[in-house]
Amino acid sequence: MTPLKICYVSSEVVPFAKTGGLADVAGALPCALKEMNQDVRLMMANYKSINERKFVLREVIRLKEVKVTLGNETRIIDGKTAFLPNSKVHVYFLHIPEYFDRKELYMDPTTGKDFEDNAERFAFFSKATLETLKLLYWQPDIIHCNEWQTALIPFYLKTQYKNDDFFKNTKTILTLHNLAYQGTFPLEKAGKIDIPDEYIQPGREFEFYGKLNLLKGGILFADLINTVSEKYAEEITEQAQYGFGFEDILKSRKKDLSGILNGVDYSNWDPETDHLISHDYTPDTLEDKIKNKKELCKQTNLSFDENIPVIGIISRLTDQKGFDLIEEVADDLMKMDLQIVILGTGDPKYHKLLEKLQKKFPSKLSVNLRFDNKLAHLIEAGSDIFLMPSRFEPCGLNQMYSLKYGTVPVVRETGGLADTIDDFDPKTGKGTGFTFKKYSGSEMLKAIQRAIKTFKDKRIWTKIQEAGMKKDFSWENSARKYMDLYKKALSK
Ligand code: ADP
Image 1 (cartoon, rainbow, N blue to C red):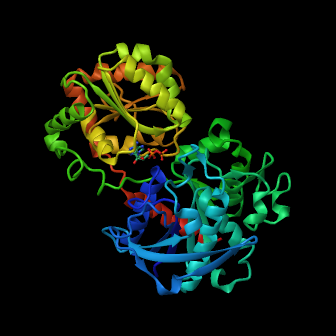
Image 2: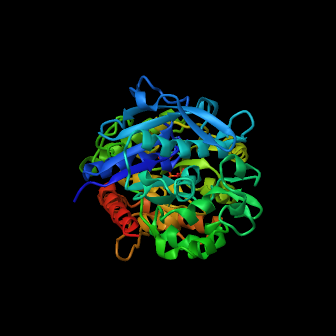
Image 3: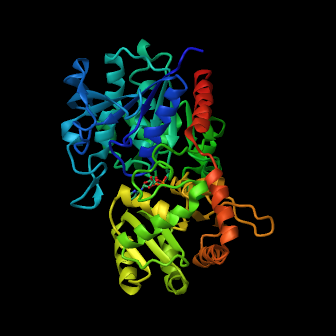
């Protein structure tokens, strides 16, 4: 079969720019597709924070000073290129100085709020992607869009570029990584990004509760849509707490909606080869894991005791991730024989909460309010248990990393967490973690109690660790499913 030409478009890509799991996926799936001999290229914004020297970005003559117009504005865009490290995947970095020479990707650090011009920033990026493809004379079979930031691409293709022969065989996929982020803006923004008035009338594609909603339009214009786990694909059509009001919109596209679990990039997340942890280990040298626990305790100011379980948490601090449950049962939780290390940044209200808890329980709790990839790896390696009590979780990566590191997950049964972690059953001895269903502090506490009780029995605990380490969530599997999805789109 001739290779498919796949253009993968993402607002963040590891290792260039990252705020969450999307970046991990965007840095890994294209490589897996390339390994399957597909012709895949990436498009991303060239943010100020990207180290052009380190990643050897090169100028592309054809992509110099490209004019892109939306509404009454024209922006000048410069495209550069580099390889995704350790791969042959070309990445194109589109630079729009007015929009991307900023400290953060989406949020203004001085106000703590989203940039006021985010709609224009990513609309220009989306249109620039299409113009870049034309200038490169590279006609993709598939444009794979992600999240609201690139959700305008299917719309532009079906409107502005409708009669453009260049794209006549191009199909679009939109992956929904998290429905909590929809790209909502005042309706007045529509004109600035070339969305004609008719599309923002009540009930139309880009209107949602009186606001401009870019994700809604993306869902309705993309040829196919998918989410990042099968369970989440079900949940979002069923209940408002998961679908964020999109349940009926998604139901209307049910035959075009599927779920494909994200994979894990084991070249970054494997204790056997991880350069960021203090001691490497494998399932055969699991006893060496304890050395990482010692180092973790040292680095996070906790006393080291082999017999006291360390619970790790690495998370964006948002309402999604279950910190209200931790708040609810903090006193009972901290009475238990355990230590907790938290790494995260996000909502100031959770920064305050965690600082308060840190003061109250200084010897048992270590709170680290920053983004720190190295510490994230050490937490995966050094913790005994990993806690993810999410309210909803489209896929979740850390629970899969935890399995690989022999760190036993305690998770709420939702979305990707439900699809990846099997509850331990003492009767059969089977299972890879401890799960709870209802979103409540006491249910979470019960699951943690079960985990801690089991931790005391080293023989059983090792069995659970080994079962987790054996699990294989490599990208190869998921990439194959994406290939099927692309073929389905092409046959539409
Ligand atoms: P989400 O995409 O909702 O943030 P995921 O579990 O899918 O959640 O992915 C989160 C990714 O971001 C993981 O790779 C995790 O290690 C990383 N991460 C989150 N917060 C931090 C932090 N404060 N420091 C380092 N890495 C972090």
